[in-house]
Image (cartoon, helix red, strand yellow):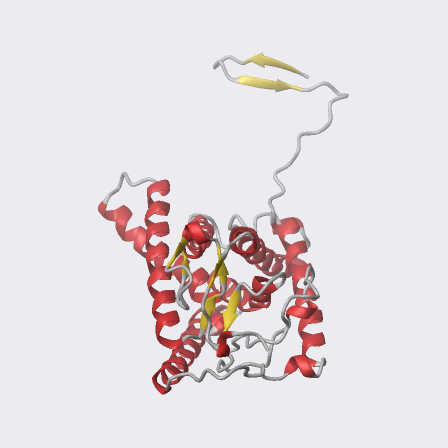
Amino acid sequence: MSLTTGPDDQVLDRRTPNDPPPLGRQGPATFLALIGAVWFVLCVYVIARWVTSGEDFTPAPRVGPDVMEDWRLIALRVFEAISLAVMAAFVWYCVVKPLRATGRLSLDGKFVLGGLICFVADAFLNVQEYLFAWNSANVNRGVWVRFLPFHDPDAPTRYAESLIWGPPMYIYFCAGVAIVACHEAKRLRRRFPNLTKFRVFVCVFVFEFIFDFVVENIVIRTTHAYAFAKTYEPLTLWAGEVHQFPIYESVLVAFVGVVFTWARMEAEERPVGQSPIEFGAERWRPALQGHVRNFAVLGFCMVTLVFVYHLPFNWLGLIGTSYADLPSYLLPG
């Protein structure tokens, strides 16, 4: 192959007959769809084993003498009710209404469903040690952690993973933040036309950080729905207290929100179905393209949550030395 200069000083690609053809832009859809399909099958397997396990699919036992104050229990039930209402609203406006109107899932709808499916990964928080404490008063049926890959047999398996307020967090901290951030970014760019995307993402990061910090600390201090049992002390506020809070929790959640916002913002600037996640699905035959796009978004959700949130959280927790002073209802059975 040789390079020559054309009449307008453009570099021309002169290929010889023996040169291989240029690589086409295939997009990440196929690779992400493979990850999404594998994760979906794993979820079905894990949940099926959990539901049919007997003892694991029962409410976690309450241990110890500590009893929640009535006002905390009421606050917990209010939090569960609000979470259910938020989840129902997202499912209705992002999944049901678009499906009824167009017969197709929007990217927002795929993010919502992806968040619900990826909630299964929440048990990775305690796959090695009890890093994330759950209140036994949560509406629960135990936890499926024992059936996840990489589970340490010595790690606790009897605690109260919330089935009410847990899944909505995987919606409003991901899809919800992306929807709100994209809406506000348009307002910012109309007011400041020279605002770069990088500065927009910095604003999204700051907003998500503050949003997560405020919401989580209010929930922890009022409801005791959960707590951070073991954290990395140099990055922990109120270390050793029941409400100790690792500042890296809000940092990681903010990065997750930025990634989802980036994907949605890019999708808004491209034709429908050509988001940076779904690009490449058009290489499949028409009957399969929709399925490839759906699983690609699921794969994107899983990769983002695992590599941006779960792995760093687990690493910092495992090397941590700050143990929260937990009441017995926040301890595993």
